[in-house]
Length: 198
Image: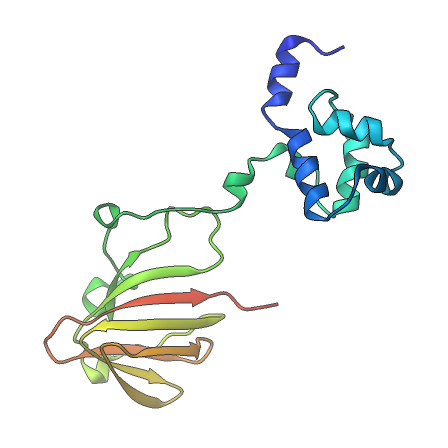
């Protein structure tokens, strides 16, 4: 028999509701889940209704059926499904690279509030860089950006491409590339970098 304190703490994990969610998502009846787990439909019903706290071996049987780990039942699923808002007034602007004077652009992170984001997104403000001092760089994955204002020269794979406001580009970022603003008008873009697919 569990103490009231333990019952209260375990209730906060909503284990029964999570089991029910998994079962209904797969379209299984209690008897069908029972057949897969070796547990009775009556026991599973009690677990789902929060009337019975399953032991770890029992919970592991259920987890194996749905190909989830035990952490699924003890974590906050709202946090697992990342949702993050980055407010305009909270963003900071930093130079791209250690040398502020030679940085081709300043950036503001658009995803720094997200926990373990699957991509990197930032707002880039491009600078007027001397063509002869343009520094190329490369990184794993791919890059996409949408030019919001101004004109930009993108160097990629030994070629130069001029982008106008409203243009978008997607490219393999393992290839050396670099950017420089053309003209004196503000030049900014939303940039997204994606990790390599395995």
